[in-house]
Length: 266
Image (cartoon, rainbow, N blue to C red; front, top):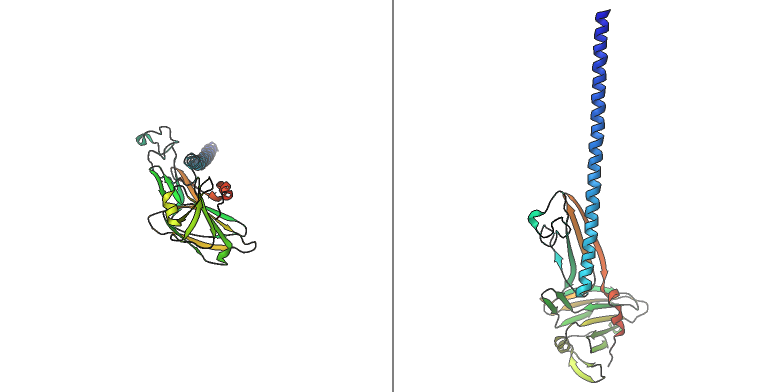
């Protein structure tokens, strides 16, 4: 009996030890999963916050430079993208485990653009783009009406102290009148007006009360770009394999709507 009891005690001890080992492993696995989830949530939140910060930085740049400003931070570890890192001035010090890098891109400039203008509404299109190196403007454009009645589209091109206005399609050789702020009128081609001034804004207004107007605007010179009236800003941020992307809608027409009151008429 003593022999049997001894083996019974050994078996019970082994079973208790095995149970404790399984329990310890299970608890340890839970701790590892919790740590992994916590790290995942932390990196997720860091990436999302950095992507939002990139959005705010992009808007700040636009506010400083103006609404036709074009900029891009490359989606890689570089001197501009590590602004939120612990050592933002040295890419060699970038910690890929702890630091986040960000990027943004302004989907702004085009040499061809098509859109629909709702009834009694308008688009404001900067006929230029602003870069850190300076302004790049459009010297000649073609405007085509694709649907509905072209006589229902009023257009204006304005500059700081002068502008031209009319209803109907136009091209660069069309001669219109423009006026200075002192009220004097002069005759000039659209192309000559664009070439003689900077920061020109094209304002298109649908004077119809019930129908959309579809239009296409082309730069005659394909190497000259203008700014779309509405666009997206794409921002992103990444830490390790955790990445967040944001797409923000930006409407220049809303920001520049005071210009719709700058109407010149001949």
